[in-house]
Image 1 (cartoon, one colour):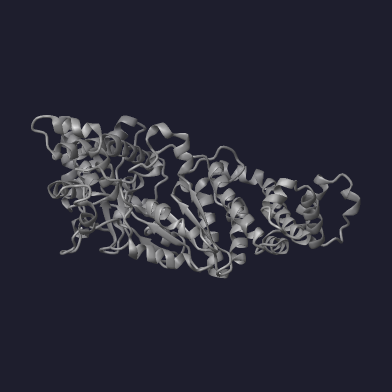
Image 2 (cartoon, helix red, strand yellow):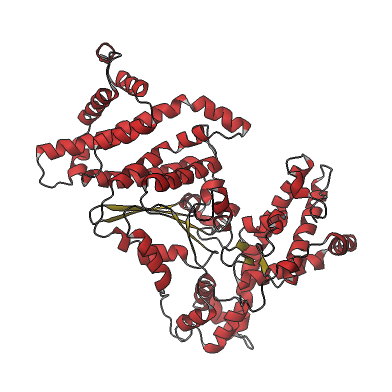
Length: 561
């Protein structure tokens, strides 16, 4: 078969929906584009939409919170992991903050050059949310030795702002001025106007920095005790949210239409602190999204698209942040077998090869891309040259690769999460409602013995996977409106490590691909084979007496997954 380059296939319906959202200059809700891993969400944004959204009046900021993970760990092969980013070493929160702020600052400078963001607008927005008198006095006194005598108590905030802007504007060097006017022929008045607005951005950033410094001790205490404070969490997101408000108020149809795409937004929840300069990652994440929602609901916000493969955003986030319509939800599942066959057969696989692929792996775009890359490799030619070798041998080798590099490490991480659950239950950190009578996970080990906790965790995970096998991997978590399966720590662990996905419509738990589903069954079989006689008896007792049964949550008849 002739080697062909991999084509990016258009998805007209999804692209139309996203384009309609992005064409508005201000919208009332952020949009969440979510779906299992490997269905092509990032490819769709980068290869099909981003260039179009950066032409004419459109300006799109793209932030990928997974980039710090890629840059710090390029040798781990984790650039595009099959499972969750939470399985990779978490990035430092300050790196993600800097990434987001630099993107928004660059967009704000473009707004300044176009004249839609002015110094007066910056002052008005800043003064609406922040007390400026003491802060501006502190800034002026630190920047000028002779300012103490000139600052009386009767000077208004607007006068203080003007003085601070003038002081900063005078320090802008020639390169920064050229950047503002981009070397074009503009009058001296226009240069002064742009310089004032650019200086206003700098003063605003310094104001927020000073006020964050005043809260440093409070943030340190909050991080130490692990509590919650909305005011401290909001102080950490003051600067990016101020920029979002400025960009939103400066947006004009057919002149300046900014939008923001945040890819892998779930990474923000798992980011780690390197110091006490800000709140923890989960608080920062919640504050940022809360304020984007509030800006859209109250004043309309520039289009914000959150791209994620974490199924938390398919259902739970809608509940945590208010109500089912708090976000616009667009769920991507990749291709159906018929669509994939139309794109793949004749170009990349023969009909007989395609029948094997769709039966064993399913039509996941990432599976197809990786298998096609393997097919073009020297390994493929070497295997096929051996006597009696077939295409099925290549698919089996690919499945073994997924088993060893993807599923087994993810299951190890899930076991560690279950052990943590057992330890938390022993220490009284798990609510009693979650350990209700009859729950299979109700009796974790009550001793501080890591070996016993590991045995218990493996027993629970095997029991859960077996229950999924019995339901043919089709569980509708809203079927009886009890949400009982969402309390199952094994289910939560497999969702967190990214092997299961809780989709929104229809409300199903399922493995992210058919290939991963096969690997889960292989894991269960391998663990059953390796069990000792005593552990086998414990497993059988677990299945007979306390075993999970989610058959009442099975898919409705006639649904073809």
